[in-house]
Length: 167
Ligand SMILES: [Fe+2]
Ligand SMILES: [Fe+2]
Image (cartoon, rainbow, N blue to C red):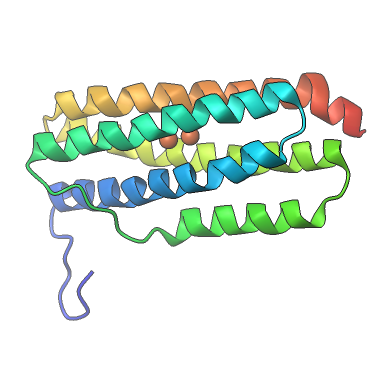
């Protein structure tokens, strides 16, 4: 954003700005997931992270398509929110010794990430529809459904296994 001018003038600008924010975020998540896969102990959790890594790579590709449809360059902008969530996750994970407690911490951290993605995608879908870009909304909706699904899966792993073991 410029120092001397307000760069976001319209809903179109806000839409593209937020696409760049989530583009950066999805790429940071692709980078962060391998460490979470490595740290996870529960096999179902490990596998869940693995499959979501592949999905997340696809989220980046879907955003590439959205940028392409808009005739905008696919480009990220710093997103301090996702950096903060990931940083905190790494810090907390570094403090935990017990395997099951670590799994619980990883699930909570991953859910913070998913909820961020869901919030951003929710807004983007609403704006895409508002701007008459149903094609973009459809693509973003596919990603949102996958974020919601993994969030539910994480809750299930926590409730049926990890939290019980850690209690
Ligand atoms: Fe994602
Ligand atoms: Fe996600």
